[in-house]
Image 1 (cartoon, rainbow, N blue to C red):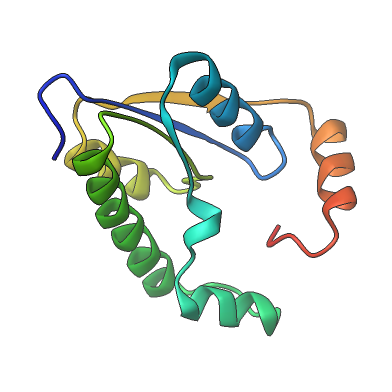
Image 2: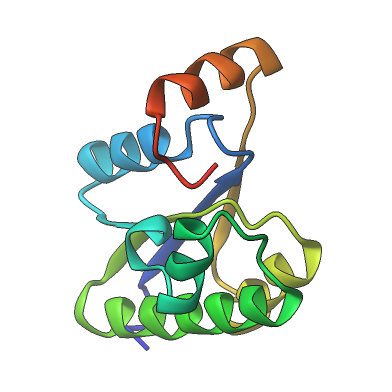
Length: 127
């Protein structure tokens, strides 16, 4: 997994909080590879979204294991990566911490009115 000097920044928070924006800004300003976890959802999660069905805990677990593996691949070919994903559950944040103890976690937060406005403007977004 990358060199011993590789860096991983994990940007997480509620849907609509600005994770993708912050991750892209970090990527641009620091020269990191940007990875949006929402762009790499598993097929079963995509199918659940299309059917407007909730995700099961097992689906979430498989999704986050997939995202961990993808992040490992990216770190093998990019010295520095910024990863953006909600990581709603503590167990999934712990999974990333266990796999990437060098990672810096950045919590993105904004007020609920801003979040509601952003989510409404997105239309078909998973949130």
